[in-house]
Image (cartoon, rainbow, N blue to C red; front, side, top):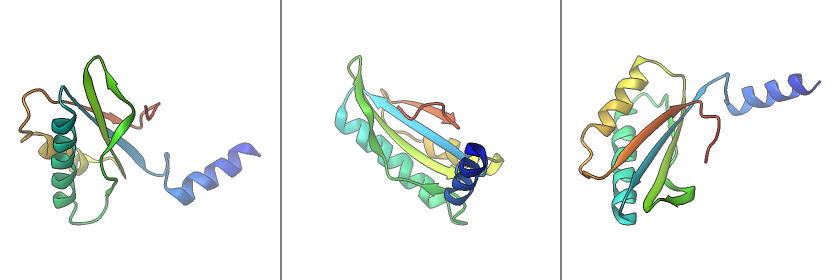
Amino acid sequence: MFYEEEIKFRELLKYPPFCDIIKIEINDVSRNQTAKTAMQIYDSLNKQNVDGKMAIYKPMPCPIDKIKDRYRWRIIARCKFSNTVIDRVNNSIKDIKSTNARVMIDVNPNSMM
């Protein structure tokens, strides 16, 4: 009973296993630079998304927005994972201008924290 309802719900909202969720987490020592880098990645992803196959949500601070003096932001994208998606994500992070930024990519994360 639970499974049948949950799988219908997931299909309707395009949640896994009917699509993949990609979490891109950016962290940096400066709050402003973290936000700036997140927007840079978001803008780059949107420019590459000409076919509209990725649903890319605007960058936001993570629920726990600062850990060990580093500010954290995230971008969430929903799509079917493929080589094209890998290329788009890689292209969007290769030209980051901040030298202190760290970017972590998690496909179908266990936690959104």
